[in-house]
Structure formats: C-alpha cells, structure tokens
Image (tube, rainbow, N blue to C red; front, side):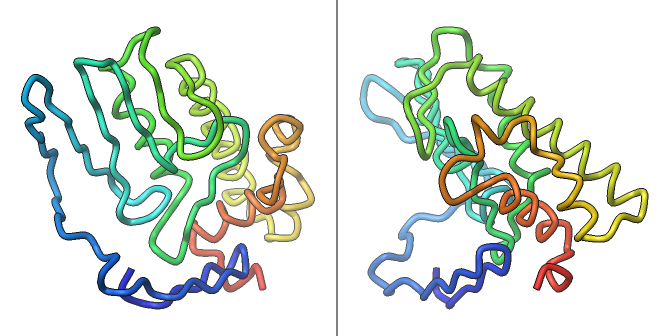
Length: 184
C-alpha cells in the first residue's frame, strides 16, 4: 500500500495509498479478537489474491469472510504485482474448508453471499484451470499457444463475464507463474 504498483496482466497502474489508509494492525499468525460473547478469528494467508490476504472466521455465527480470495460468479483478480498466484488462491480456499459446513455463510469479495458448495465449486474450477495451464507450460507451449488453447473456455460463460474474461484470467495465471515479460 505504501508503493505505486503496476499489474502487467491488466495494464493497471495503482497509486500508493495515503499513510492514513495503511493498516494499524499487522500480523503473521492467526489472531483472535474477543468481541465479548464472540471471538473473531483473523487467519492470514500466503500470497494468493495479493500478499496481504486474510480470511475472517466468526465461528459462533458460522460466517466465513473470504474477501477477494473468492468471487461468486466471476473470475478473481490475481495481482501478480504483489505476489498473487492462482496456486495461492487455491490453497487459501482449501484452508478453511475443513472447519466450515453446509450452513456456513461464505462472504465473497464480489458477488452474492455463498455457501460451502459454492466455495468448493469455485475451488474446483480454479484447480481444473490450473491443471490445464500447468500441462501446457510443462509441454513447452508459448504464451500465445496457451492463450489460444483457452484452458478456461468451458468455465467462461459462468466465470468469465465482466472485465476478467477467460483470456484475461489466463494472462493473470501466467503472470503469477513469472511469465509476465512474455505477456507484453
């Protein structure tokens, strides 16, 4: 937040935030905040959407706030300028799955309130696309060949609406794998 950023896959320039917007509490391990009759659990994640991702769990209300680690009905933004990666996104989704259930309200960063099944579906979609991209990269495909193979095509009608189309999403994935310079 303290430095200007450039996101190559989206060609976004993001200005640094004013000091007054910087966090006043930072943490590298899970933190519980006592709210009196309830405890709010803040669970930091390895770089995924960005390098500062946190899952918020309110067990007494059975509410999981995923923030931009989940988008409901669209592909997520993976910010490679701050170490984001598809693999990190998948891992961040996997971590809370063991402690949520069918009645858990899952709050995404974008889209309607979801449930565990929606989160699993989002995870499985990302995992499938990741596998396809990994196979293409391992086969020595060029960036142009990977984009032409459209590894997200079957999911694009549901997840590729808006500005993060399937092609844009695959570009973000490739950038997260360090292929940024080849996307320009």
